[in-house]
Image: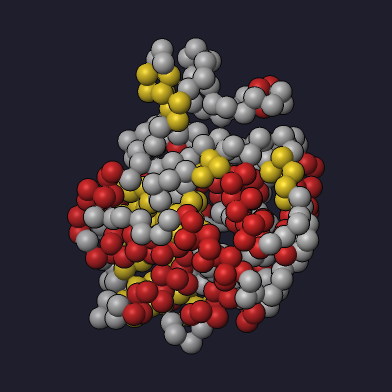
Length: 377
């Protein structure tokens, strides 16, 4: 029987993964600090924590604590490293917290794996599409280009589209593949790039197989409804349940690759069980792009609400315009196929939300924090 350690395993992805691994006969250990931003003041009321409570070997601990790592790694064969701070906007002003957790916590793991005796045979690391920044585009004049951050002077005039970095003309978005240039536009994206590359460098040097998955925008039942910093389906749902209007950034036509939780956990299991994944990096997505205005209108219709959808023209520094992952590589190497369409996935998500207690809406507070730092315009 293989023993799997899931860091951040009481969270959204980790708890769903833990249940699937248990069903496949794995023994599962979870380490999680039960962050109040995700789980609330009372973890015993946390939906995802309760999914795994009593079913896994649970360690309340922190990835920044070396002793917690030592305890968690005992007799473990596979590490799935999910623990991370994840809010793109929040990362732009809580910089030290994101560096400490995402890079510092990973470095402690790698130092132990390098210098201590252990039974770890494989490391799976949760990377992110945020490492690509704006991603891959095509310019009529200059071909394939990788634009950097959009200019504030353009966005302040309501011009939100991405431009060619050479001629400044309009460009066409292409699915972003794993060979695309890496230039994250947020502190979060930078930490995920560092995390991924650290694992690959150290794993190669000590001959420990590493698999990195660059997740697109993950959603589904169990996503925290308490966290106002990440997950627009959850943020919008909490707004709606509190009878508050929905604020859409930019013009509403920014797009995302929303990938359902079951497709994410299936991909991780493919990485665990398939040696062809070793020392490779994969996008994990849905293969379809959905604009944010469509998300808001779909949620409004499904909840049967009269709240207003306000397209504000406001924008956050560090946000990207479009996102669609190229899935060719993971399909070729791991036979991965996303199974849940956005239409089905959002229905599943809404059905789940309808059964949950209404959470306090802290969205306005999160926006005010960004305004105070000059990051929300």
